[in-house]
Length: 272
Ligand SMILES: [Zn+2]
Ligand SMILES: [Zn+2]
Image (cartoon, rainbow, N blue to C red):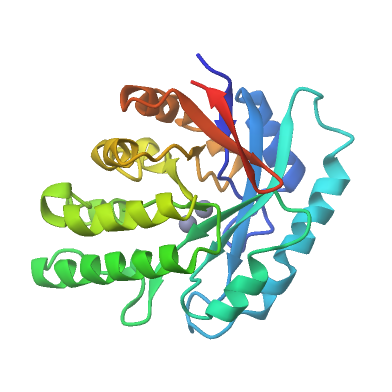
């Protein structure tokens, strides 16, 4: 087994986590992780009102401060990196651009959870096929916009709404049979811009498979994509590094020989 990596996890700098930074770091280390990046939410809009969220301006600073408080107390063989999950970039592109080059951070995940038309994908009703098609259509349109903006290193959890649909008994994802052309265009944009994707293992943890699915990972590889980070998306210490070992095995099975970590916004490749 290759060294364990987790490049997507949250602490109480994120509004939906109460995990103290040091506890999270040490839980990841105890789970075997040796390359770790904390990626707290940096939300350009408020999740409920969709108004501009002023707190996003201080996330990078809080991230650096938290790192400083632990850096002399962590094991020497832990490579701890500072990052953030920069979200909803298309609502305020100028703000997103400004936030995307924070001094001192190693890694930016670019993510998308909310549409202007319907709000957060967490709250949608996936049971009506026509509405579901509309949601997925908007999802792909907006992911393409995020990719075109290009203010991040790696696009987070492509197709993650599958988890929420599964809670309603609906199995739906971004299948290539239905959405192949648009997914391919999205991946080509990311590759041309030198950006990567992640394999988000929270879907493995929840029984619906990784985000994105294996077939999209294989397509990305066949198009020449090489940058893939691995993340648990843990929000509490009990979930630290959950299923990242399986995620790394999935990558190998999809033909990748390396996974990617970042330092100072530059990719580094680690054999799988
Ligand atoms: Zn996310
Ligand atoms: Zn996350």
